Amino acid sequence: MTNVDPAESVAARFAAVKARINTATTNCGRSSQEVALIAISKTHPASSIKNLIELGATDLGENRVREAEEKIPQVGQTNARWHLVGHLQANKARRALNLFDVIHSLDSSDLAQRLDRLCIQVGRQSLPLLIQVDLGHEETKTGINEQELPRLVETVQQLGRIELIGLMTLPPFFDNPEQARPYFRRLRELRDDLARNGAFGERKGELSMGMTHDFEVAIEEGATMVRIGTAIFGERNAGH
Image (cartoon, rainbow, N blue to C red):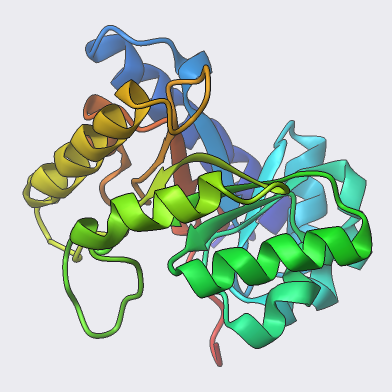
């Protein structure tokens, strides 16, 4: 059996994911330039992330603040755009602010106000963020109910330092990715309604949706950010 260099296997998987994104966008009449590939490095070492940056990755995502604190200094904070895609606890907001360029998981007015206050305290002029919308209503997942979304958007618009750039969702896992389509479609409808009312300023609004098993369907429904971990880095390391 031939030993495969882990760096080579990551390179092959990264290339394969980019090819799949290109195919998916072409099939639905979109450009691959419209979709940001966020490589989710949860449980994987800094060395793998450095290899990926050398291959051209520009956007990296982490689920946990604590893990990011260990890895981002090793990789280099300015070597990529760092995204927090996991739930953000209020007591970790300051640490997240110092690590991440974009936060995908805003889910309450209290957290919005805390982040805005912290931006003022640390002198950060702008924090781009997305609101996580809970469309699947699973107990294990966070996010704001769509009925409460307009009020949260209103709160964010009244704050000076945080900048709403889009919406994110994490639908239930289905063996058949087609079953996730209604969730992606609904997020797009919510985004479109907000955009019509100027929630994202002059911009259309980002849609952060789609992971390893369903990102092609998400792209068909308008995803502008896909969060891919396993298809790039392989299975998560044991013990996490």
